Amino acid sequence: MQRLADRIASVFVPIVLMISALTFLGWWTFGGEDSLVHAIVYSVTVLVIACPCALGLATPTAVMAGSGAASLQGILIRSSAALERAAVVERVCFDKTGTLTEGRPVVKDCDDDLLREAASLAVGSNHPLSVAIVEGARERGLSFAAAHDLSEQAGVGLRGTIEGRAAELCSAASATSRGVVDPARIPEGLTASVLIVDDQVRGVIVFEDRIRDEAAAVIAALRTDGRRISLLTGDRRGVAESVAASVGIDSKDVHAELTPEGKLQFVAESEETIAMVGDGINDAAALSEAAVRGGVGIAIGAGTNVAIESADIVLPGERVEAVLEALRIARSTRRAIRQNLSLSFFYNSCAIPVAALGLLGDSGPLIAGIAMGLSSVSVVANSLRLRVSLRSR
Image 1 (cartoon, one colour):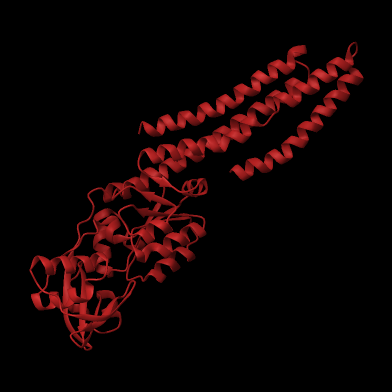
Image 2: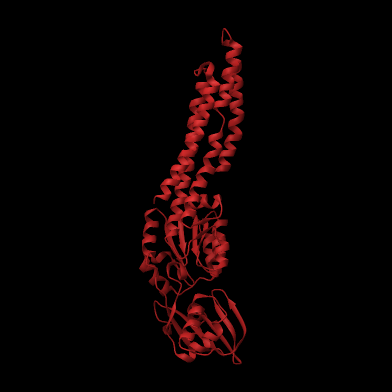
């Protein structure tokens, strides 16, 4: 919108100069007595009263007010472009783990030997499920086995060697899609990981992860604001649909068993303007792609550094409700910019004819200077009104 204002100004200024020149020629030719004096005074009045100061202030003052109000709520908006793009978001895509859920899963069902071997692979990973496995093993006082040649593939799982045996700790979705494990062994509606040792299924580890208390209210408010909602997750469809039903997301908008590349592809192929909300390494590519496609990436502040660095907007701590606040601030800021531009255009469209016709008299330049200053004050005052209204929410 600032670039639009600049383009308008690049056309507006030459037109004003032309009107001023025509005003001078008209009053000099037809002004009667003291025509030259009138021509100079009125042409100068046109130049002064048409000074596009308010036009230049319209966008930056509103952006400062909006981003300042966001910062007071702990919301970091990295650029004015991100603030503008957030205002036109049509669909909000949420990651599941750590975004709609608390991201602190706990092991629900697992024997000690299975947990010990899984923890030996997971001890070097910061994935929420890996952390839950390691914490569960430590709570039981289990000692870890020696693990070597560890590697991690985002969205798939961990590989390594435990006591000389090839081992893999992978997601249930990955294991079932490869035909490694019978889907019937995976509890419906619960997150699970599968431990495979020497190409044999060693066992299934089941987790619980609480849904955030405020998640359903946030989804409902976003719908009220006219935005569509999707859930993008690497977890199994049964788990994803269970969470979606709890927070009010339609099953047709649930996209499960997605790798990081799958999330990226969904965002890249969408015809809507998307805000991608996530917190993990698996979400980083989709967060960046949302901005490339004209939307925004929004990271939960308690998430990974990679996600935070990839996002345009960073929310405080674990406050998923700040998604709603950030998008509403962006929409209010865009509305204020439009109001400011309208004020400045209305002022100039009314003031230039008055000045050119000499209706301000011989004191025209003085009155024009005062009026021009007041137009800038009105724009700044409207931006300050935005700041006050956002702070009072």
